[in-house]
Length: 464
Image (cartoon, rainbow, N blue to C red; front, side, top):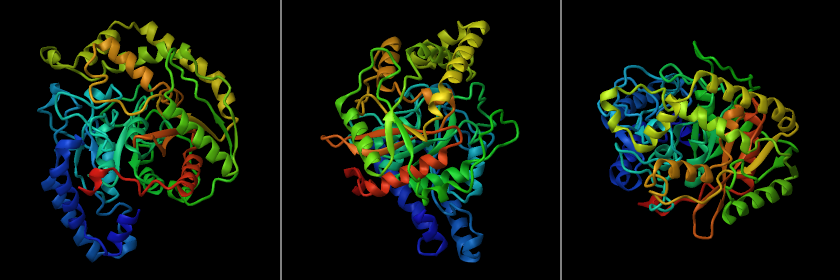
């Protein structure tokens, strides 16, 4: 990462870097809705300590992200820092421990800017809540930054953070990365620890990086990765570092592609199809074999995933006397979850496992799989949130019918920001890989980035 390298070379001051981002947050966060809590005093204290270490220690003794500001999503706990889970139920909660991913980012030398906005319990694919302003894509402030890592993506896209930590249980890194024009990685299940605060009973969710470049995301994934005591999922080992994969040509790959939504009735917008077709053509231009993906994940899986999602909504304990503070969508999902019996839950799990046993022999024949990340362009703020819960959820399914399949399977998947619509909105494409195949996806994405650079594409607010 160029910023970390500049700190090690004493070309940039961690204090000046931190002050730069805190100034931008103060001026621009009300428009963007990226942060729910800003830890300015703590950030400056950590930056001063980082600056002293950078002056006192040899460069090779400094950690990989030494002096680099990194915000944490408000679903992850930071000891001593306010945590809301995106909910009015928890406005007075202070973190009492560090999540494992927070500890790893701290050990890597990062400076905490604050907590980024998330919807209630991270359940929706947009970021609107009762505790913070809506997170908006900096490319069009009338439109949502997606979710549930919407604040994290809005922060990076608007220049309110250089990189950000996010999490993804049904697309929550890839969705906001797509609508904000960023590169985001959902790692293989078990690559990054979910512990110790949030239970990971279903293996759907994982932490991951959101960044403007493939190399920055790869470095951050290196920092975040590794098993921790109590983790129940372990990812296959990786040869070398993810950062090394970003500098390594992928070779000629066999890539499948598919644009048929798994959600019945969902239709893919022409702008999203254009991004998908352009990416297909670019992959072939780069020498890869691109073939059509046989049917693997169909509409029959959607009800089983919905059942799991409702049960997941019940896992955050809410005192009965505070249930009235929950958002309508959350209450609706929790009612479904509490009405689910244990046999129904195990039947859904069994159905999904059975489908995966049929799908993996097909998907493992390919080095990568290409899809549109989303079926629709960035949605206006309120498009989902202002509806009754059932309509809200139906609109979400139509918006993001591709992402959740890879949370079910545990396969890694990335959003690549290759395309912008004629009206200037970012439209991402998704590449998924084999279990443990993040390195291949990173190498391939770096090749795409070199062929069609996006780093210089910035929204107008960047220069504000």
